[in-house]
Image (cartoon, rainbow, N blue to C red; front, side):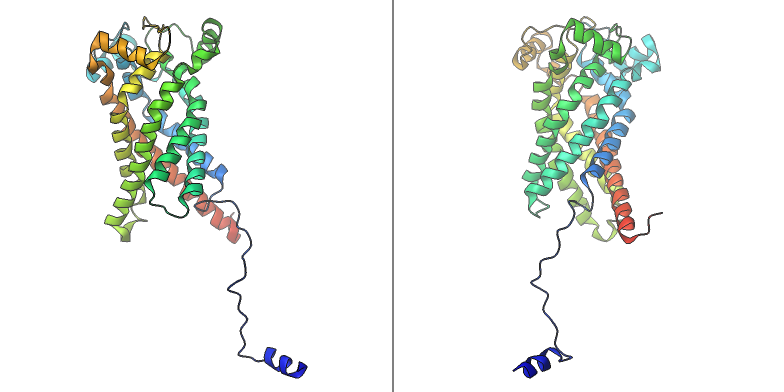
Length: 327
């Protein structure tokens, strides 16, 4: 018996079956990246996006807060001319420091939460629009908690004759005069605005990206940047148009009491909407929609292409590190 067993296992044609063996657990990565790499890519993308498009955002803020402020027109050209004439080109960048302090951390949270939830709930189905939209909504709720205070400071600084000397002066005075709650006066509105914005944005981006890749699958790698930029622009423009009324409400809440803007007793979204409609009609809820779209379409293109470029960089870095070729 022992001789038969020995003969069997010494057979040169015998091949052991390893198909049922369980491989060792892989490191916690998604798309070949660790989550700190998603955070860095997202942070850089967010800063570049908002810094590049900041002058357009300044024009939009002026147009949406014109109730009693120096600018009396809802025309993009007249708003821009008024800013340049009264204060010069530097006025278009007032408040950019607050944007820089808030955009980096907020986008780091935004993209890392999105990638985490997308991986967790997709179960390998990369075409699930509901997962993309739901993950995006959860991501924006988390990131808005980080970004809203600095966004409020940024918008107040953007207004002409706001009386604030800078970011830290604004933070100090708001804390002493209005309390900590003033930094989050618009948080509920921001979440209600950004939830549908992000749902439309992410679902449109993923669908557009997949559609563009299917049009020319043989040149996906060569045209990767163009695909991300085009899909991002389409997603940003559509989402911006849909959510403009809530963006007007958010601006009114964040700028209340500054530069002659109305102050609201309750901070209720309904009260703000009633005030806007009473003074300016329903068209007042669409105030600033043109610069908002002009901001978000190229901003999303910049953000997504930068984010995907960052991911590609880290993917190449990880591959080189694993192969021992990193210098």
